[in-house]
Amino acid sequence: MATVLAHESELEFELGGPVYRLMQRIGLIQGAGPSIGRRFVGFLLITWVPLLILSLLEGRALGPTPQESLLLDFAVYARFFLAMPLIFMAEVVAGPRLRAAGLHFVEGDFIRPEDLPAVEMAIVRASRRREALLPEIIMLGIALLGAWHSAEMLSMTTATWSYTVVEGETDLLLAGFWYRFVAVPILQFFMYRWLWRLVIWTLFLRDMARLNLNLVATHPDRAGGLGFLGGAHLSLAIFPFAFSCVLSAHVAFQVYFEAAPIETFKTLFIVYLVLMELICLGPLLIFVPLLAQARRQGLRQYSILADSYNRAFEQKWVTGQTPPDEPLLGSADIQSLADLGNSFGVIREMRLFPFSQQQILQIAVIASLPGLPLIFLVMPVGELLKLLAGALL
Image 1 (cartoon, one colour):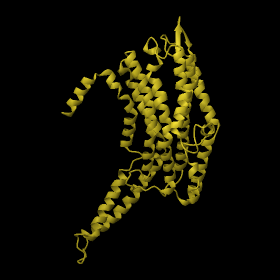
Image 2 (spheres, rainbow, N blue to C red):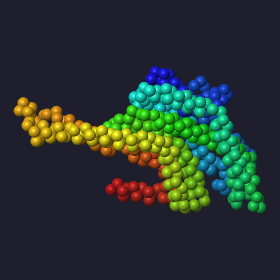
Image 3 (cartoon, rainbow, N blue to C red):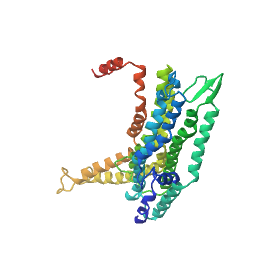
C-alpha cells in the first residue's frame, strides 16, 4: 500500500502534460499552482482583445445591426468570459476530487494485497498518457482542422461582425479570421484536452474494474462502497455548466435579435442534457458487471445465513423449549434478527451503478442553470412574477 501511495503525485488528471509545461515556461503558470487568474488574463489578451481591436478597426465592434456587432454577440462573451475560466477552474474543482477518488480504492481497502502491483501499474500508465505529446498534437490539429472546415463551409446570407456577404459570396474579415483560426481553436483545444483527461480517468477506472475489488454488499451507500465515485463525478458538472453558457448565449442571441421561437431549441437542449449526463456519469457504468456480481453474491450468502439463523431462532423461541433463565424481552436474538433483516434489505436495494438518482438530477439542474435567463426573453417580468405568486399562494 505504501508503494502505491508513493505514486500519489502521478495520479493527477488536471495538471501536467506538454502544454502545461509550456505555460510554465512562458510564465502563464507560476510554480506548480494552477494560476487560474493569470492564465485567464493571458488568454483574454490572446483571444478576445485582438477581436475587439480588429472589430474596432473594421467598424464591427458596434455595427449597423446586432448581427454585425461584436459587442452584442452574447456567445462571444460566454465563450471567452465564462467557458474559458470555468475550464481552467475545473483544475481546482474536478481534478483533486478525481485524484482523491482514485486513491480511495487503496485507502478504502478495496484493493486486495495481491492486486497492489496492478494498481501501481495503472497509475503509471495514467501518468504516461497524461504526459504524452502525440495526443495533444492531435487535439490541436483537430481544433485547427475544424476551424478551417467551418470557414470553408460558410454560406451565410446575412453579414456578421466576422464576415461580409457581397453578391452571395462570403468573405472572412480580419476579426473573423482571428476568431476562427486563433481564438476558437484555443478554446476548443482546452476542451479537448479535458476530454482526453476524462478518457485517461475512464481507462484507469477500467483497470480498477478488472480487479477483484473487495466490495461490501451491505455498505450503506447502496453501491457496494463505490458511492464515493458518484460524489467525485458530480464535480464534473462544471463542464456541462460551461458548455451550457455558450449554448444558452447563442440561443439568446437568436431569440432576442432574430425573433427565433424558443420552442425550436427544445430538442437541442434535451439531447444536450442526455449527452452531458453520459459524459459525467457514463464512465462509472464500467462497474455495472462488478456491482451486479457483488449483489448476487451478497444475496446468496445472506440468504443462506438468514435461513440458518431464522430456523435456529424459530426452534429456540417458537417450536422448541425456551430456556427458563433467558427471557424473550430484551433478548439479543431479537436485535440480531432485525439486524440481519436490515442487512438483507440493504443488499436488495443495492444499485448496479455507483451513483444515485439525486446526482443525475443535480447534474441536469447545473447544466440547465445558464438557460434560465432565456425565460425572461420570452415572458415579461410582470407575467413571470404573477405566475410565481400564484404558485406560492
